[in-house]
Length: 297
Image (tube, rainbow, N blue to C red):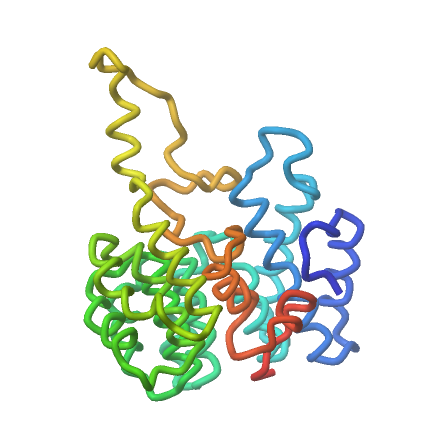
């Protein structure tokens, strides 16, 4: 099944949707079909359809995916596991209905639904307080998703926890990599001091993640770039016309995109996020990149 958007096209999307709609198909296969649609949704939502050829699917197909996923998620007869994966895939291109869906999943009293909800908080804004709360969750999968969500939105209230994970020598590697990746979006000015010890690590993945985090911390913020672009080299104030949102396809108002884009960045620290962004739960990297199937299925 599709997991890599470079081989996705309109026909393959229709095939995946056909599997997803087929109630006679096993729930595991339907769930895999759903989560496989996540990467192309995010890519299309980010790139937009202004320039032909930028996205391997048409705008009509993109909108069809969104409509189909919403309908199937709203169908009470859709199995729980399939609905979870539909929600996890569909939030990669957020729509208005997602906020209530995530809140409902979070408050369901079901640990798997809560895991899905915290995963979705990486893509849907407005959950900073819940993200901070879930940093203390004893479930390691939910804890990891909360750290990734904190990094995605630059949640400043998460900083003490993130710093503690980095300083502790007992932090599991996946959690440590997520914490390292969160540093530049939360407190970039602290990156050098907080991450300095890890530069000498014997683990190449950790060293690479640290170097990427340090490089990201040195990049100007979007606010700084906007301030710089507002003036010409002569100091004359100029104005640029730009969209209200980076979500081209849906016309969202206000900043909708996380500070860290887990799927689209190519270097290692964000490959770790990309590996975990196909869906909630732990999974081998090869499984996630190829199929988007996850260990708690």
